[in-house]
Image 1 (cartoon, rainbow, N blue to C red):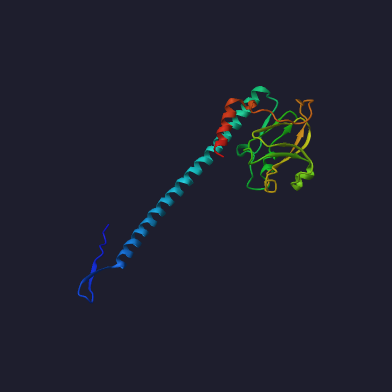
Image 2: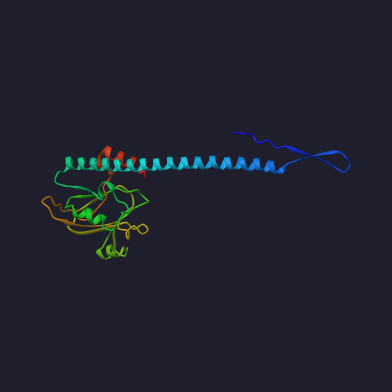
Length: 222
């Protein structure tokens, strides 16, 4: 880089003595040139940081998908070895319980499943970000909370399906319900129906240590 040198002009005063007048314009030009160089370097650094952030976000998203799939597989394995006739349904599949891209996401997921008494619903979600409320059909249709039957605020949540009939669930945080984070299922009576009544949340131990640690790792990427 070439160095700009400022020259001084000499002016004679009325008394005949020489006075040195530094050219302020040259110094101003030098200051502006260095300021522009600084701005360009800062801009390049910011652009590089944004690119790195995008790459990191993409990697975190991929990691979340993988961990959710692993947690789902481990849950299915434990369920199949414990009681082959009962099914653990991972709500939303690999996506888990989240605000969906459309209002029919969970309807489409449930349409492919068969729910019977004795099965379990597995909700994978981040506590304080999402929750689950079991309500009546009227509340479900209107995203209302006048007749709340049960509530789960800590994930992961496991719900035993012990009663036949229609079951209605939705997320009550913000406008999640209006956005389509709601699930309705029809539970039928199978050969393995149990006489117990009500629904309750089981502990994460049901999915085994591998499933638990996998889900904890998933929470770190949320």
